[in-house]
Image (tube, helix red, strand yellow):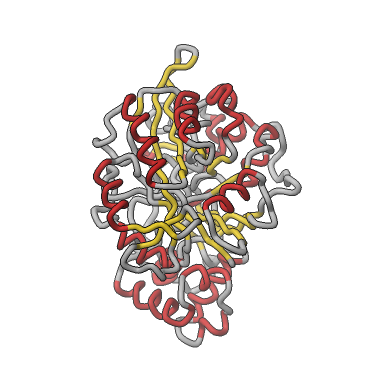
Length: 427
Protein backbone atom coordinates (compact mmCIF):
# COMPACT_ATOMS: atom_id res chain seq x y z
CA UNK A 1 0.00 0.00 0.00
CA UNK A 2 1.14 3.54 -0.74
CA UNK A 3 1.45 5.66 2.37
CA UNK A 4 1.78 9.46 2.19
CA UNK A 5 2.82 10.86 5.55
CA UNK A 6 3.09 14.37 7.00
CA UNK A 7 4.71 13.88 10.40
CA UNK A 8 5.23 17.47 11.52
CA UNK A 9 2.17 19.64 12.13
CA UNK A 10 0.78 21.75 14.98
CA UNK A 11 -2.43 21.88 16.99
CA UNK A 12 -4.60 24.79 18.10
CA UNK A 13 -2.42 25.01 21.21
CA UNK A 14 0.63 26.24 19.31
CA UNK A 15 1.24 29.95 18.85
CA UNK A 16 0.19 31.49 15.53
CA UNK A 17 -1.91 28.43 14.74
CA UNK A 18 -5.53 28.25 13.62
CA UNK A 19 -8.00 27.63 16.43
CA UNK A 20 -9.66 25.14 14.08
CA UNK A 21 -6.65 22.83 14.27
CA UNK A 22 -8.53 20.20 16.23
CA UNK A 23 -8.29 16.48 15.59
CA UNK A 24 -11.48 16.35 13.49
CA UNK A 25 -10.35 19.14 11.14
CA UNK A 26 -6.89 17.63 10.81
CA UNK A 27 -8.35 14.24 9.90
CA UNK A 28 -10.86 15.79 7.49
CA UNK A 29 -8.34 17.74 5.45
CA UNK A 30 -5.67 15.04 5.66
CA UNK A 31 -8.06 12.71 3.83
CA UNK A 32 -8.91 15.37 1.22
CA UNK A 33 -5.20 16.02 0.72
CA UNK A 34 -4.50 12.32 0.25
CA UNK A 35 -2.53 11.76 3.45
CA UNK A 36 -3.08 8.44 5.21
CA UNK A 37 -0.57 9.11 7.99
CA UNK A 38 -0.27 12.40 9.85
CA UNK A 39 1.50 13.49 13.02
CA UNK A 40 -0.56 14.75 15.92
CA UNK A 41 1.88 17.50 16.82
CA UNK A 42 2.09 19.13 20.25
CA UNK A 43 1.76 16.01 22.45
CA UNK A 44 3.64 17.75 25.27
CA UNK A 45 0.81 20.25 25.75
CA UNK A 46 -1.37 18.92 28.62
CA UNK A 47 -4.71 19.94 27.09
CA UNK A 48 -3.87 18.58 23.64
CA UNK A 49 -2.56 15.33 25.10
CA UNK A 50 -5.85 14.95 27.00
CA UNK A 51 -7.83 15.54 23.79
CA UNK A 52 -5.72 13.01 21.93
CA UNK A 53 -6.32 10.37 24.61
CA UNK A 54 -10.08 11.02 24.46
CA UNK A 55 -10.50 11.24 20.69
CA UNK A 56 -8.00 8.70 19.33
CA UNK A 57 -7.94 4.93 19.60
CA UNK A 58 -4.91 2.75 18.98
CA UNK A 59 -4.98 0.53 15.91
CA UNK A 60 -4.16 -2.97 17.13
CA UNK A 61 -0.43 -3.78 17.22
CA UNK A 62 0.57 -0.88 14.94
CA UNK A 63 1.48 1.83 17.49
CA UNK A 64 -0.58 4.20 15.36
CA UNK A 65 -4.00 5.72 16.04
CA UNK A 66 -7.30 6.56 14.35
CA UNK A 67 -10.29 8.68 15.29
CA UNK A 68 -12.25 6.75 17.94
CA UNK A 69 -15.53 7.73 16.30
CA UNK A 70 -14.29 6.72 12.82
CA UNK A 71 -12.31 3.49 13.29
CA UNK A 72 -12.45 2.72 9.55
CA UNK A 73 -10.97 6.07 8.52
CA UNK A 74 -8.02 5.79 6.11
CA UNK A 75 -6.18 8.47 8.11
CA UNK A 76 -3.79 7.18 10.77
CA UNK A 77 -2.08 9.32 13.41
CA UNK A 78 1.46 9.10 14.77
CA UNK A 79 2.14 10.74 18.14
CA UNK A 80 4.53 13.64 17.50
CA UNK A 81 5.71 17.01 18.78
CA UNK A 82 8.13 19.79 17.85
CA UNK A 83 10.19 21.33 20.66
CA UNK A 84 12.59 24.26 20.80
CA UNK A 85 15.85 24.06 22.73
CA UNK A 86 17.84 27.15 23.65
CA UNK A 87 21.34 26.65 25.00
CA UNK A 88 24.89 27.99 24.91
CA UNK A 89 27.66 26.39 22.88
CA UNK A 90 31.16 27.90 22.83
CA UNK A 91 29.85 31.19 24.27
CA UNK A 92 27.15 31.53 21.58
CA UNK A 93 23.41 31.12 22.10
CA UNK A 94 21.97 28.33 19.96
CA UNK A 95 18.29 27.90 19.13
CA UNK A 96 17.33 24.60 17.52
CA UNK A 97 13.96 22.98 16.82
CA UNK A 98 13.48 19.21 16.86
CA UNK A 99 10.65 16.83 15.91
CA UNK A 100 10.01 13.91 18.28
CA UNK A 101 8.18 10.76 17.15
CA UNK A 102 6.95 8.25 19.72
CA UNK A 103 4.98 4.98 19.47
CA UNK A 104 2.22 5.64 22.00
CA UNK A 105 0.44 8.16 24.15
CA UNK A 106 1.90 6.35 27.16
CA UNK A 107 5.49 7.00 26.06
CA UNK A 108 4.46 10.54 25.12
CA UNK A 109 3.39 11.16 28.71
CA UNK A 110 6.72 9.81 29.96
CA UNK A 111 8.62 12.12 27.63
CA UNK A 112 6.53 15.08 28.77
CA UNK A 113 7.23 14.30 32.43
CA UNK A 114 10.95 14.49 31.75
CA UNK A 115 10.80 17.62 29.59
CA UNK A 116 8.63 19.45 32.11
CA UNK A 117 11.78 19.89 34.20
CA UNK A 118 13.19 22.18 31.51
CA UNK A 119 10.24 24.42 30.72
CA UNK A 120 6.52 25.09 31.11
CA UNK A 121 4.80 22.74 28.67
CA UNK A 122 1.41 24.42 29.05
CA UNK A 123 2.46 27.74 27.49
CA UNK A 124 2.85 26.57 23.89
CA UNK A 125 2.22 23.44 21.85
CA UNK A 126 5.81 23.80 20.68
CA UNK A 127 7.48 24.30 24.06
CA UNK A 128 10.71 26.20 24.62
CA UNK A 129 13.11 24.19 26.76
CA UNK A 130 16.16 25.32 28.68
CA UNK A 131 18.30 22.35 27.71
CA UNK A 132 20.88 21.41 25.11
CA UNK A 133 20.22 19.31 22.04
CA UNK A 134 22.23 16.34 23.41
CA UNK A 135 20.27 16.52 26.68
CA UNK A 136 17.02 16.41 24.75
CA UNK A 137 18.00 13.32 22.78
CA UNK A 138 19.27 11.58 25.91
CA UNK A 139 16.03 12.23 27.81
CA UNK A 140 13.86 11.08 24.91
CA UNK A 141 15.84 7.92 24.16
CA UNK A 142 15.95 6.89 27.81
CA UNK A 143 12.16 6.60 27.71
CA UNK A 144 12.21 4.18 24.76
CA UNK A 145 14.62 3.16 22.02
CA UNK A 146 11.62 3.30 19.66
CA UNK A 147 11.51 7.08 20.02
CA UNK A 148 13.02 9.23 17.28
CA UNK A 149 14.44 12.77 17.29
CA UNK A 150 14.78 14.56 13.94
CA UNK A 151 16.23 18.08 13.53
CA UNK A 152 13.41 20.26 12.18
CA UNK A 153 13.64 22.42 9.00
CA UNK A 154 17.42 22.25 9.25
CA UNK A 155 18.27 25.27 7.06
CA UNK A 156 15.76 27.88 8.22
CA UNK A 157 17.73 31.01 9.30
CA UNK A 158 16.24 30.96 12.80
CA UNK A 159 15.72 28.02 15.15
CA UNK A 160 17.41 25.27 13.14
CA UNK A 161 20.44 23.02 13.09
CA UNK A 162 22.27 24.88 10.30
CA UNK A 163 20.46 28.22 10.73
CA UNK A 164 22.45 31.27 9.68
CA UNK A 165 21.69 33.16 12.90
CA UNK A 166 21.82 30.62 15.72
CA UNK A 167 22.78 27.28 14.21
CA UNK A 168 25.85 25.10 13.78
CA UNK A 169 28.22 24.27 10.92
CA UNK A 170 28.35 20.58 11.88
CA UNK A 171 25.63 18.27 13.14
CA UNK A 172 28.14 16.67 15.53
CA UNK A 173 28.68 20.03 17.26
CA UNK A 174 24.95 20.29 17.88
CA UNK A 175 24.17 16.76 19.09
CA UNK A 176 27.67 15.70 20.17
CA UNK A 177 27.73 12.06 21.37
CA UNK A 178 23.96 11.79 20.80
CA UNK A 179 24.40 12.22 17.04
CA UNK A 180 24.32 8.43 16.74
CA UNK A 181 20.60 8.54 17.59
CA UNK A 182 19.71 11.00 14.82
CA UNK A 183 18.47 9.02 11.78
CA UNK A 184 17.22 11.81 9.54
CA UNK A 185 17.08 15.53 8.80
CA UNK A 186 13.99 17.52 7.81
CA UNK A 187 14.63 19.56 4.66
CA UNK A 188 12.10 22.33 5.36
CA UNK A 189 10.31 24.42 2.74
CA UNK A 190 13.40 26.34 1.62
CA UNK A 191 15.63 23.36 0.81
CA UNK A 192 15.31 20.09 -1.07
CA UNK A 193 17.42 16.89 -1.35
CA UNK A 194 19.79 18.17 -4.07
CA UNK A 195 20.74 21.11 -1.87
CA UNK A 196 21.45 18.77 1.05
CA UNK A 197 23.39 16.33 -1.16
CA UNK A 198 26.00 19.05 -1.57
CA UNK A 199 27.23 18.29 1.96
CA UNK A 200 28.98 14.91 2.06
CA UNK A 201 28.70 14.89 5.86
CA UNK A 202 24.92 14.45 5.50
CA UNK A 203 25.09 11.31 3.35
CA UNK A 204 24.42 8.97 6.26
CA UNK A 205 21.14 10.69 7.19
CA UNK A 206 17.78 10.11 5.54
CA UNK A 207 16.03 13.27 4.33
CA UNK A 208 12.40 13.68 5.33
CA UNK A 209 9.89 16.37 4.39
CA UNK A 210 6.89 17.60 6.36
CA UNK A 211 4.58 20.60 6.22
CA UNK A 212 5.11 22.13 9.70
CA UNK A 213 1.60 23.45 9.07
CA UNK A 214 -0.28 25.80 11.39
CA UNK A 215 -3.65 25.35 9.69
CA UNK A 216 -5.47 22.40 8.16
CA UNK A 217 -6.25 24.07 4.83
CA UNK A 218 -5.07 21.85 1.94
CA UNK A 219 -2.54 24.45 0.80
CA UNK A 220 -0.84 24.05 4.19
CA UNK A 221 -1.25 20.48 5.51
CA UNK A 222 0.73 17.97 3.47
CA UNK A 223 2.40 20.63 1.29
CA UNK A 224 5.53 18.55 1.92
CA UNK A 225 5.34 14.85 2.76
CA UNK A 226 6.98 11.42 2.66
CA UNK A 227 5.87 8.56 0.40
CA UNK A 228 6.29 4.96 1.54
CA UNK A 229 5.29 1.53 0.23
CA UNK A 230 4.37 -1.01 2.91
CA UNK A 231 2.59 -4.33 3.08
CA UNK A 232 1.20 -3.16 6.42
CA UNK A 233 1.33 0.32 7.92
CA UNK A 234 2.86 0.35 11.39
CA UNK A 235 4.98 2.75 13.43
CA UNK A 236 7.92 0.32 13.34
CA UNK A 237 7.76 0.03 9.52
CA UNK A 238 7.89 3.80 9.11
CA UNK A 239 10.74 4.27 11.56
CA UNK A 240 12.76 1.31 10.30
CA UNK A 241 12.52 2.45 6.67
CA UNK A 242 13.76 5.91 7.69
CA UNK A 243 16.59 4.61 9.86
CA UNK A 244 17.79 2.25 7.13
CA UNK A 245 17.21 4.70 4.25
CA UNK A 246 15.45 1.77 2.63
CA UNK A 247 14.51 2.82 -0.90
CA UNK A 248 12.33 -0.28 -1.29
CA UNK A 249 9.97 1.08 1.37
CA UNK A 250 10.80 4.80 1.60
CA UNK A 251 10.14 5.76 -2.02
CA UNK A 252 10.45 9.54 -2.20
CA UNK A 253 9.69 12.84 -0.54
CA UNK A 254 7.28 15.44 -1.83
CA UNK A 255 8.96 18.83 -1.82
CA UNK A 256 7.80 22.29 -2.69
CA UNK A 257 10.24 23.94 -5.06
CA UNK A 258 12.72 25.34 -2.51
CA UNK A 259 12.51 28.73 -4.20
CA UNK A 260 8.91 28.84 -2.98
CA UNK A 261 10.08 28.83 0.65
CA UNK A 262 10.08 32.04 2.67
CA UNK A 263 13.84 32.05 3.22
CA UNK A 264 15.31 30.65 0.02
CA UNK A 265 17.20 33.75 -1.18
CA UNK A 266 18.95 36.39 0.88
CA UNK A 267 17.01 39.62 1.22
CA UNK A 268 15.33 42.37 3.21
CA UNK A 269 11.54 42.35 3.25
CA UNK A 270 11.09 45.95 4.41
CA UNK A 271 12.97 47.22 1.37
CA UNK A 272 11.63 44.58 -1.07
CA UNK A 273 15.18 43.44 -1.79
CA UNK A 274 15.84 39.85 -2.94
CA UNK A 275 19.34 38.67 -3.89
CA UNK A 276 21.00 35.44 -4.99
CA UNK A 277 24.00 34.30 -2.89
CA UNK A 278 26.43 35.77 -5.40
CA UNK A 279 24.59 39.09 -5.48
CA UNK A 280 24.34 39.28 -1.68
CA UNK A 281 28.08 38.76 -1.36
CA UNK A 282 28.70 41.66 -3.80
CA UNK A 283 26.84 43.93 -1.38
CA UNK A 284 28.68 42.57 1.64
CA UNK A 285 25.40 40.99 2.90
CA UNK A 286 24.09 44.51 3.54
CA UNK A 287 20.82 45.82 2.17
CA UNK A 288 21.62 48.17 -0.75
CA UNK A 289 18.67 50.38 0.26
CA UNK A 290 18.99 50.84 4.04
CA UNK A 291 22.44 49.26 4.61
CA UNK A 292 21.11 47.00 7.37
CA UNK A 293 22.18 43.37 7.59
CA UNK A 294 20.33 41.12 5.12
CA UNK A 295 18.49 37.99 6.21
CA UNK A 296 20.75 35.28 4.83
CA UNK A 297 18.84 32.82 2.69
CA UNK A 298 19.05 29.06 2.73
CA UNK A 299 20.74 28.87 -0.66
CA UNK A 300 23.55 31.12 0.52
CA UNK A 301 23.91 29.19 3.77
CA UNK A 302 24.17 25.89 1.87
CA UNK A 303 26.79 27.46 -0.41
CA UNK A 304 28.89 28.36 2.65
CA UNK A 305 28.96 24.79 4.01
CA UNK A 306 28.88 22.73 0.80
CA UNK A 307 31.86 20.60 -0.23
CA UNK A 308 30.27 19.49 -3.50
CA UNK A 309 29.25 21.49 -6.57
CA UNK A 310 25.69 22.50 -7.38
CA UNK A 311 23.97 19.75 -9.34
CA UNK A 312 25.77 16.92 -7.54
CA UNK A 313 23.61 13.78 -7.50
CA UNK A 314 23.91 11.44 -4.57
CA UNK A 315 23.57 7.78 -5.55
CA UNK A 316 21.36 5.23 -3.82
CA UNK A 317 19.35 7.86 -1.99
CA UNK A 318 15.63 8.31 -1.50
CA UNK A 319 14.05 10.17 -4.42
CA UNK A 320 12.05 13.36 -4.43
CA UNK A 321 9.28 15.07 -6.40
CA UNK A 322 8.70 18.81 -6.62
CA UNK A 323 5.01 19.70 -6.26
CA UNK A 324 2.99 22.70 -5.16
CA UNK A 325 -0.42 22.77 -3.43
CA UNK A 326 -3.30 22.38 -5.88
CA UNK A 327 -5.06 25.46 -4.51
CA UNK A 328 -1.98 27.57 -5.20
CA UNK A 329 -1.82 26.36 -8.80
CA UNK A 330 -5.52 27.08 -9.38
CA UNK A 331 -5.36 30.54 -7.80
CA UNK A 332 -2.30 31.46 -9.89
CA UNK A 333 -4.04 30.57 -13.14
CA UNK A 334 -7.21 32.41 -12.06
CA UNK A 335 -5.17 35.45 -11.02
CA UNK A 336 -6.38 35.48 -7.40
CA UNK A 337 -4.03 36.33 -4.56
CA UNK A 338 -5.62 33.98 -2.00
CA UNK A 339 -6.18 30.24 -2.55
CA UNK A 340 -9.24 30.12 -0.31
CA UNK A 341 -11.66 32.05 -2.52
CA UNK A 342 -14.94 30.46 -3.61
CA UNK A 343 -13.75 30.62 -7.20
CA UNK A 344 -10.74 28.46 -6.34
CA UNK A 345 -12.75 26.09 -4.13
CA UNK A 346 -15.20 25.48 -6.97
CA UNK A 347 -12.44 24.15 -9.23
CA UNK A 348 -10.71 22.34 -6.37
CA UNK A 349 -13.86 20.52 -5.29
CA UNK A 350 -14.63 19.48 -8.87
CA UNK A 351 -11.24 17.80 -9.12
CA UNK A 352 -11.50 16.13 -5.70
CA UNK A 353 -14.98 14.82 -6.52
CA UNK A 354 -13.61 13.21 -9.68
CA UNK A 355 -10.21 11.95 -8.46
CA UNK A 356 -10.86 11.48 -4.71
CA UNK A 357 -7.94 13.43 -3.22
CA UNK A 358 -5.43 16.16 -4.01
CA UNK A 359 -2.33 14.01 -4.35
CA UNK A 360 -4.04 11.80 -6.91
CA UNK A 361 -4.75 14.97 -8.89
CA UNK A 362 -1.21 16.31 -8.54
CA UNK A 363 0.64 13.04 -9.23
CA UNK A 364 -1.59 10.77 -11.30
CA UNK A 365 -4.58 12.47 -12.95
CA UNK A 366 -4.31 12.62 -16.78
CA UNK A 367 -4.52 16.12 -18.26
CA UNK A 368 -7.17 15.01 -20.77
CA UNK A 369 -9.43 13.67 -18.01
CA UNK A 370 -9.01 16.82 -15.89
CA UNK A 371 -9.82 19.03 -18.88
CA UNK A 372 -13.24 17.41 -19.17
CA UNK A 373 -14.35 19.03 -15.92
CA UNK A 374 -12.18 22.16 -15.48
CA UNK A 375 -10.51 24.88 -17.57
CA UNK A 376 -7.83 23.16 -19.71
CA UNK A 377 -5.36 25.90 -18.75
CA UNK A 378 -5.58 24.73 -15.14
CA UNK A 379 -5.12 21.10 -16.22
CA UNK A 380 -2.03 22.11 -18.17
CA UNK A 381 -0.69 24.07 -15.20
CA UNK A 382 -1.06 21.04 -12.90
CA UNK A 383 0.87 18.88 -15.34
CA UNK A 384 3.54 21.57 -15.82
CA UNK A 385 4.17 21.58 -12.05
CA UNK A 386 4.22 17.76 -12.03
CA UNK A 387 6.81 17.71 -14.83
CA UNK A 388 8.99 20.41 -13.31
CA UNK A 389 8.21 22.96 -16.02
CA UNK A 390 6.89 25.70 -13.72
CA UNK A 391 9.17 28.49 -12.51
CA UNK A 392 9.27 30.17 -9.11
CA UNK A 393 10.50 33.65 -8.25
CA UNK A 394 12.48 32.89 -5.05
CA UNK A 395 11.11 33.73 -1.61
CA UNK A 396 13.19 35.80 0.80
CA UNK A 397 13.15 37.18 4.37
CA UNK A 398 9.74 35.74 5.29
CA UNK A 399 8.12 36.30 1.86
CA UNK A 400 6.91 33.21 -0.02
CA UNK A 401 8.16 32.68 -3.56
CA UNK A 402 5.91 33.51 -6.51
CA UNK A 403 4.76 30.80 -8.89
CA UNK A 404 5.13 31.47 -12.64
CA UNK A 405 3.27 28.80 -14.60
CA UNK A 406 3.44 30.10 -18.16
CA UNK A 407 5.67 32.43 -20.10
CA UNK A 408 4.59 36.06 -20.38
CA UNK A 409 3.35 35.48 -23.91
CA UNK A 410 0.56 33.24 -22.65
CA UNK A 411 -2.83 34.80 -21.90
CA UNK A 412 -2.71 34.41 -18.16
CA UNK A 413 -4.44 36.80 -15.79
CA UNK A 414 -1.75 38.82 -14.00
CA UNK A 415 -1.20 38.52 -10.29
CA UNK A 416 -1.06 41.53 -8.01
CA UNK A 417 1.94 43.74 -8.72
CA UNK A 418 5.11 42.51 -7.07
CA UNK A 419 7.57 45.18 -5.96
CA UNK A 420 10.39 42.78 -5.21
CA UNK A 421 13.78 44.23 -6.27
CA UNK A 422 16.98 42.47 -7.24
CA UNK A 423 20.55 43.41 -8.04
CA UNK A 424 19.76 44.98 -11.43
CA UNK A 425 17.86 47.75 -9.63
CA UNK A 426 21.04 48.89 -7.90
CA UNK A 427 23.68 48.61 -10.60
